[in-house]
Image (tube, rainbow, N blue to C red; front, top):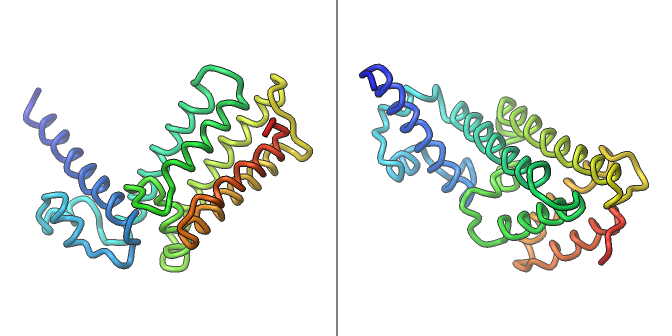
Length: 203
């Protein structure tokens, strides 16, 4: 590998390490409560190097969200489109994974949209726009899965698939917040029961 290629790879690795570390820490503490020094120290990156990759903390936050949603939507593709079995089963598997990953305990960055949503939507227009794009992508993936499930006959819905997908995402987003408030996973159990009702799945 040439020196130039090595430099590009190293640069990408450092940027990815900063983002991964930020996702883990901010997923637990929030965006405003975490300083850049904490992230960079944990990532083992000098502070002076930060501005080589990100122009500001806000730009870092936007990149953090973009990176998070890119990985999240890729995971959705694997669960909803590439996995074997009836679509209804794949959708249930997706929401079971939501239950497992977005608990009231440390989610290790896997619940970033839930953790940062309300906080950064009022803090930064660019970060709000990233959240909007990312959550729209989630709803779109769900809608396409529901459409496929209806087509194959493994589920049925009373409303247009996109409306159902929007309702399901909002249901689980709200349940994720309630789980943190009540310190119990009961809201997820209720969300799953409602999900099965909306998709006409057996309890």
